[in-house]
Image (cartoon, rainbow, N blue to C red; front, side, top):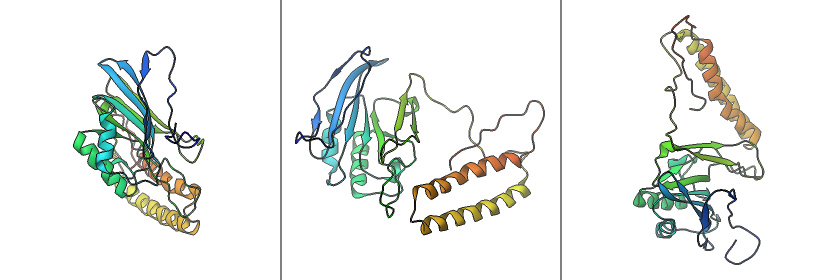
Length: 248
């Protein structure tokens, strides 16, 4: 609920009734509105927080620190921070993003994000960017998997943050090549992809950075990955599986 008790902003948490939990006192200020519940995991109490921070306010590092200190020694605080910083995957760094990052550094916190845009403005002059992410404390970052879902329900993408008792590790290091790669083929590939990227960027400018064209630009790394597989000679038995990255 917004502190002025009107129907805008605010935050909420939906939790299954069979999960043991209790709600803490909501954090309600014009700058930050947060709802928190405390659950128990394999190490004890864990605070799970959903928050919304309106974009119009100036927030200092000390204000962020005061908020995070209310969440206890172990927490997951996710939501729309309306703060941009390249440290968590935004395209640029804003003053609010610098203040938030300073608070994160002072309190030794970690950020968890999908690395992809989560806000899709209706204004064609504005560029989609990442403003929805999680900040955690007391939990190893390897326990998390963060995914940005494409099913839009508003001008924000749904961000799925999964936490497991085991570390989430990749089976293999992502590689674009191996010893059987045809480098002459890759040279031709680089010219094709370079032309594709220039054309896509040109079209983005002409179309005022529409959502459809931005997604086309984002498709080119996958094209590189797939074509790299085509120019790699497939061996017979005992060939190691090569995991190629989807994003670069």
